[in-house]
Length: 397
Image (cartoon, rainbow, N blue to C red; front, side):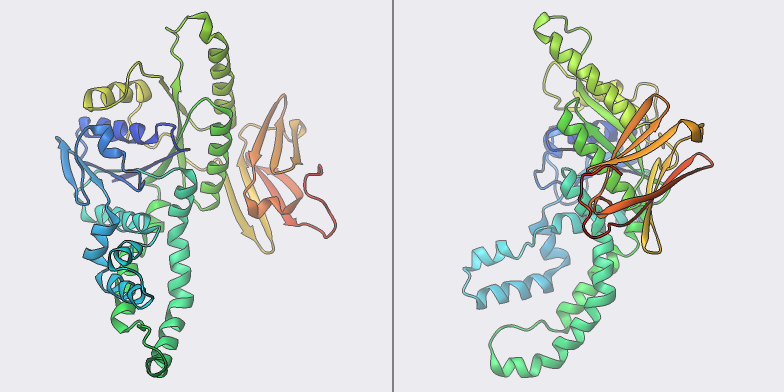
């Protein structure tokens, strides 16, 4: 079973690429389900079909799902919704508004995590394709298992005991609805449906694919996303460079644009090495419907198996060792004499011979100082320590 997650900056075409990949997998005979965590709900538009909160067939062995958080809330979180609506009603919120406000932001992502786990455990699918929300929301989505586990392990038990102890007192002092055991039990039952989802999404069968356009801001955000994904332990196995100007465009008006695309494509290939970069040209018309998606899939994957793991290993990892953080970069066939490591503002600069790579640092490392570096067995390890007081960010180290 294979799980593929697609993400990228809003507007780069990640939904279309995810849809095309799902169709490619289904055409290869794989039982494929594609779902979206993006509240914009554009997955159905890409296929030109109607999708609901439950899986429905698109064609052959391809099925799709587009979550409706409000609808799903009633099915799986009814006790909690009833409690939230009671609190809002007590606060004087109109009934219709209370029903809308009871749909807490982020529920789409939580329900999607639950569905991914359920689909994986069912044995009904060979491939699960996830069209994630834009990058910032995707990072939140992929960090949710850690956040929820921390809450359920540390806060939830104490909160439940405190509420149980003070409920008799509060009920005499105020008419504010107090969460009962049924609400806490519903929360526990729902979390149990998510237990283990992080291990599933960071396992060998799961990969993230980044979709980028040949634009400076898009590439910069994708690089930061790759760093954060590594920080949370998720594997990126490919980058899709989408909407490249085709060679057939020869009008002089596009000359500067094509040169910029070529430069940005080189940046993508160098900056994300050794990940494979799959290329898709800018389509002459809107990519909607199965035929258009098949053409896009042919352009992206060519001789590649869309469901295969396109890159083994993790080219970049971050781990904690005592009080320090260690970033590991895979640099095969590198000699120590040709290696230089430096720091500029929020980037780590690594030079190997005539080639230099700038690695965008996550916030947790930006506030730390490079304390040392070592090259062992094709891996460069950079140690980050707490920054001494009085030292300014942005200075070279």
